[in-house]
Structures are given as C-alpha cells and as structure tokens.
Image (cartoon, rainbow, N blue to C red; front, side):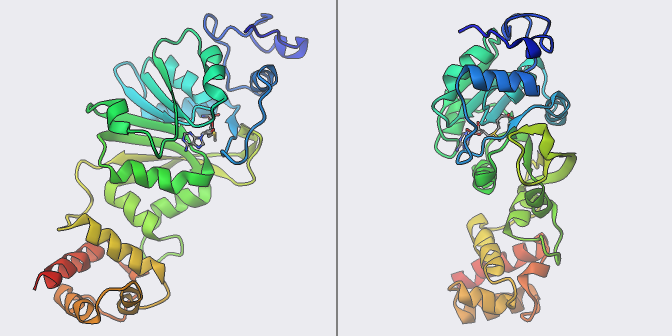
Length: 307
Ligand code: SAM
C-alpha cells in the first residue's frame, strides 16, 4: 500500500508525497502522520484495547533513553499499536520483539515499519504468549506504552515469572505509578507497591500530558522505570506465602493484621504464633509494614505451619 498524503500533512513529512517509513523513515510519533496512517488503514482507536497512540517524538525518545536501548539489546515491546514506539526502539539498533493483540494491526505494522529488519511483530495476547520461548534465555529489556485497562496484570505477570528482564520502562497511568513507588503507611501503598519494590527499584522518569496521545486519555500519564533486582529486596522462605500474607493484609487494609489474616482464612493459632515469633505487634495494620516485616511474618507462618 502506498500512502498518498493530504497536502497539508505532506509538508510535515519530508516534503514527500509518500510516507516512506522503510527508506526515509518519517517519524510516526507525529499527529499528522498518525492521523494519516489511521485514515489510510481505516483505523479507529479501540477504547476496549486501551489504544492511545503516542504522537510526541520527544516522549518516544525519552522512553528509548530510559530503557537504554541500543545495538546488542533485545527488547520486548508490549502493544506496538501502529509502530510509534517500536520505530524509536528500532532506530536505536536494538532487536525488537513486539506483541500486539489487535488482529488488524500486524498488517498495518508490516507497512509502517517496512524496512526495519530488526523488528519482529508477534500477534497475540501478552498475558498468554510464552515469553521465555519468544525471548530465549538471554537477558532482555521491556519497553511499552501499556494499555491502561490491564497494566497491573501485565506488570505482575512479567515480574512473577522471574524472567531475565534487566529493566522495564513503561508508560502507565500516573496514579498507578504512584502506587508502584509508594512507601509504607501512605494511602497509595498496597500489594502492587510491595510486589514492584520486591522485584525492582522503581522510579518515575517523567510526566506525559494527555496531549501527547491520539486520542488524549482522560488521565495523566508518566513513564516509570523499574530496574529489576538481581535478587528480590528481601529474602523469604516461600514467595507464595509472602504474597499470600501481603494480599491478606491489603485485602482488608483498615483491619489489624491479625483480623485481616483471619478474614483471609489463616488459622487464628497460626497467626498468633507467627506474630509473636516475628515480634510484630498484632494490633498493627499491614498497610504500615515494610517489606522486611512482611517477610518476617511470612517466614514465621511457614515455620509455624510446619510444627
Ligand atoms: N505503542 C503504541 C504507542 O505508543 O502509540 C500503542 C500503545 S496503546 C496505549 C496500547 C497497545 O496495546 C494497543 O495497540 C493495544 O491494541 C495493545 N494491547 C492491548 N491489550 C493487549 C494485550 N493483552 N497484549 C498485547 N497487546 C495489547
């Protein structure tokens, strides 16, 4: 397919009358180019699939820099859309594997990213694809402008699998990023904070205003960078128990740890024993616990369950 641009966008793109993404590489991260691609392929951004396409080249560059993409890197991109961030990643020289759920888009990407031989498009659901099989055993990086409707399940799936990810740089809703970096005793602190901080060192890289997307989302966004730890932040005897305790604590966050755990189905005698063993005051709420305290309590639960 060739792209006969309307004359008004024509000037914006290389003073050419075709969108040459294989040769001259017009930048997709541009409102005119994005509108043109959407029109040429008769695309409508799907709300259901969380489609908000980036149209700001500075933001794309920011994500590429934040993830530190370059030659020799393998990058997994989640949801390439029409190829906006993919193009920036490909330009860095990294090998990019991009998984896209929308069945209409692989054909579009074949055109918009024509000429980039370092990009592999994989149709499918990131929550269902076999990532180790796709990426191999070598370390890789993750970059994404995540669909906001499933941000947490995607992050949790990536982290819980203990994949050889070195760094993860993604666009997320600002409110979610604040939960990811939240400290104990704050309103934003929850199971997501504990999980992200257990596996990674997260920080917010920069803010992204709604006008950087088409269509503009109704929420503020940020790019968050998570440096994946070589070993988790705290050592635990049983990771499953650790997250069971965390889930119980935040399931009923206004209750004391003792009552919250009872509510989650733990045996009262086991809870009492574990709390006394770990030296944690049974009247405290789990929302005030550090990762270390969750680890102490979870380890004590493992011990008392064995006796
Ligand atoms: N990367 C593009 C950009 O920055 O303009 C598009 C980002 S858009 C916010 C999210 C993309 O993720 C969409 O293309 C959407 O179709 C795709 N997506 C949604 N759910 C997905 C899933 N479960 N697995 C893979 N891709 C998904």
